[in-house]
Image (cartoon, rainbow, N blue to C red; front, side, top):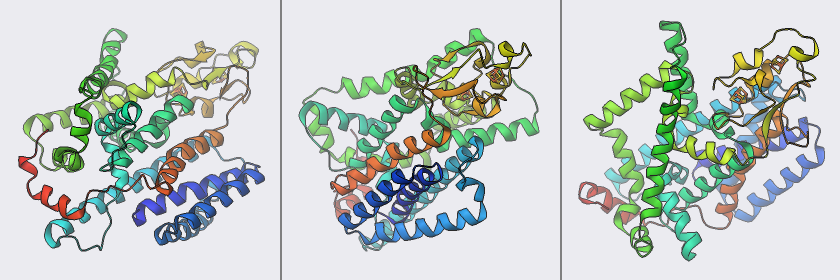
Length: 405
Ligand code: SF4
Ligand code: SF4
């Protein structure tokens, strides 16, 4: 595991322990800290130990600079803002590390100076899907990109348990879209949302893209799975994906331009219209027991007869929260902006049908546990690092153009 991966992993896990502590769950914090220290000890990985030390120091520095993130009454929007930005920064640094690693490999061969950041295999959803199928159908565990299936499983699990909180709280693409939208509204003020008759078919595009990806994964004949997973294309699937961005063709450039324009055009347009991950999470979120629930007796619209629709106005997905008692929409990203905007604490919350609520802190902790504890466990079980030999990776890199499926 690279230093950036170890640092991010440890930062998230130490932050979970600190949030449990500040949330009043001292025993939970103790259990989390003990588990974390035990995991580092069992792994005997100097990189994880270094990551743990750096993460602890960084969180102390963050506590000094941003004390509002470490109080029992932490607010919703700053918590989400910091999580989104820290995760995006981590992905950016990892992408830089990945680039330098391949430049070093291409120019100097296997120097052993840098490790490959396996977490970027999270950007191989098709490979992850095929690996998941091979595991469930044949008990065949891929060794070229094990992190792909671990991260796919983690992200899908967040959909089942936390709705689309991955989109609202963790996805760096969603965050980039938010900035593009803000930039556009500064330059060209105004909302240009499509009418409902156009919005609905546009939303279906992401489901069509998801159907296509599923067709690729499920449509592959069973006897082809081991052949594909042992083949050259799969070994360099990450490099093929990287080439897609570093040497884009005309059609790719047009697609990028459309995506950027869409993201600038309306809030969450990429998540809403195009992202197949968002589609998968949207479908899974329908089964999630957690929903945004409004208590009409507490809502000032009913309780005081006062007009109020702050929740609806705050919702980036355009959901009419003030007219619903339960938000079932597949577009709800559990971002909790509606809850943050609501003037009555008892009126609106994320919770279960039996009335039990999950606080924003609880949601953030659950999300981080799924996204980071699962990779940690996979790492401890020896199912995280790619087993492709560096010499083979270099050879395949040099013949990348000739490698096809
Ligand atoms: S309903 Fe609330 S939690 Fe869901 S997307 Fe809208 S603002 Fe976010
Ligand atoms: S913001 Fe709160 S009080 Fe206002 S309409 Fe929404 S749920 Fe009711």
